[in-house]
Length: 573
Figure (cartoon, rainbow, N blue to C red):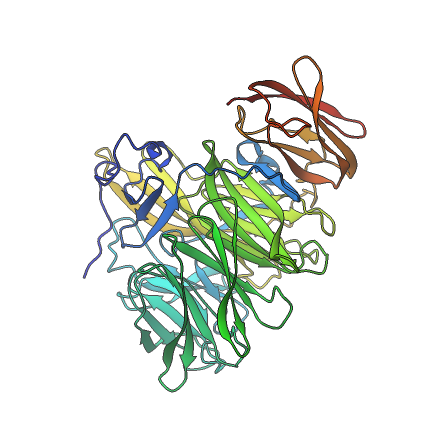
């Protein structure tokens, strides 16, 4: 069956999206490549032209009234000046492959020649989906260019994952002919060859999302994990050497509408990986193999956001001796879009407890949404790398043990032409040393849409590669703000709570007090030492006596050793 790229004349929403929907204004505009359907009052389904879909809760998230008892960092994307970061990485190459609908390229040095291959689909203007098979590109040091070294059959158009599943030293390549179909698996016939020979097919569930592999139970045999939408469940399958396929092992069904993303690491330091996943409602679940008992859902938690599909494991990023896992999601808070990352560590009483939070204000992504950890600057600590909407950013830890703070190390905003005839969106970003120079390149996959005078649309999908600019005079930490800075509280006006974020150039005592309009101090919010970097404090709209204050204007005074600033806030009930 042929899948033709949609050529649409106007932006069409399904009949279930009516003008009176109170959240319709939050939906992406002019996306003729998406079919958008209302599922509940707050949840919408976004389906691409191949039938792959995802759910997004775009309602207002009501935050708890409990004050934060841990550090947090706020980055307001609308106030970030991207110019100082411009020369840190420079545009290097463009290659004509991508991997569809908010997915990154699959990258692996399968032939072990120290030049990782890029696995993706070539979509050119006027392409149809039966003529865009997967291709393998690789960098050649002879002419310093990337070349198409292999093209798969026309029916194979999705790159899913590459892994040595049967542990024979040769990689298997997991693909599909559309996102809702079974897996077509290819193998390498020799250790140093590409995985291009048909191996086996896996008859899976409808829309197998977030496929990953590991030996979770440490028995020497790999397992595959994925999320299936109908019904909503996470499935773990064990590879079976005798049938050269997978057997069902464990299933976790959740009551929420949608789940997405996984991280897995030995967070408990007991030799077994803990698998973390999240849901559209912000519920978080931990699965783990326990000797003698098998796989269990060992913990259930919640983060203060919706769409908890971003997952990451880091290796003791703050140096306190504990590994971390991160759960990220996006929601609207009093109409303000925020992507929120919450970091957890082990805790004897609560199993896992939140220890810090990063809020990226101004972003709710309907497209690119991926996260990974990498020691980008080779400082010995991982940086947090994430692609959200039309931004790729690298966040660097600037705190101390048990005190988290983060600052932007690098940020790249989509600079493709944007007007009534042109539009583009990031699919996602990965980093890899493609040319064996000991530096990781940034590979951003994106889609470009061009509209003609009749509003018909044509597509192309491709990837842009950015290389670290070793000739740049930019000093490594030049991009980190060194000035004392207090941003306007948000939301403002607010009810019931608001956030105050500040940037400290050095460790300093900090005092935050709330005054009424006649100059009376009605609340001391903070009086403590703080590390250099970004911090946030939440004010719950209460006075020192714990009672909720009346509506009105309140002044927030922030003082450090040698700086002071007052900002005006408005509490509305």
